[in-house]
Amino acid sequence: MPNATGRRAPALGRIAAVIGAAGLVAVALTACSTDPNTDCGTALPSGKASQLVEATGKIGSKPKITVPTPLDTTKSERSIITEGTGEQVHKGQVVEIQYTILDGKTGQVQQTSYGSGDTYPLALGSGNAALSKGLQCAPVGSRVAVVISPKDAGGSGATSSGVLVVDILKAYLAKADGAVRPSVSGFPTVVLAPTGQPGITIPSSGGAPKKLRTEELKAGDGATVKKDSIAVLQYTAVGWENKNVVFSSWQSGSPDIVSIGTGQSQLNQALPQSVLGQLVGKKVGSQVVVEAPAEGQVPAAAWVVDILGVR
Image (tube, rainbow, N blue to C red):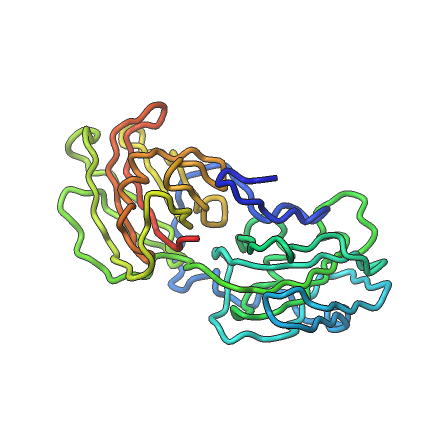
């Protein structure tokens, strides 16, 4: 089905939806100094089943896939058929993919994205865990075979393994990486976990904001956000009065994909137009703090938004 941004997300049959929403909980910053999302030790290992999957053809074009049948595994595996030359992808990133899904018992194609003329956004770390781990730490430009065990497929009563051949065509930033700018006096204080997730402290003096104010903590140099852009964002909003988290993409385990023009998002959160309007003209890689007055049912809040990409 089309998502909130009008894009059709990949339906992986009995494999759980790859991009999903999660409840909002309080922000908790970890004490470790390295980003745990970049740990390649949690990626799926290569194994006998995944090594039997063959796929030929140009990356990004429909491959010719050969799978001996029946192909089954009790533990999910992955093998990189063709290794790309781009940067490795990690948990917490959105990647653009093309994919083919086959039934391990029969070798029959169940679904393919080729022929649609579009790539599909996949949030690593959200949805089916085995699929995310199967792509983790593979370089952009790679073709990967992932054989998912019935146990990990996400459906009840599964009796055969799922075979996926995935081309990783593009990866968006995992967190804002722009040049650090000096903070502006009077704005909320922002501290960052190694993952990039922000913690926000509301100023103790002064009441809730009556008008919009914006500062840029990091200035990116990527593509420019426009009024009609579909943007890949990470964001946290803390209510000014109650100091509670009122919006957060970080808590879902993946970035959100947001229509700047309508406020509708992949996580099905209708984001305030006033806040999104402050992102127009900013560049990918930027981190923006927005003090926003109450708007409709959304209380006055401090927002921290990482602009990770423009689709």
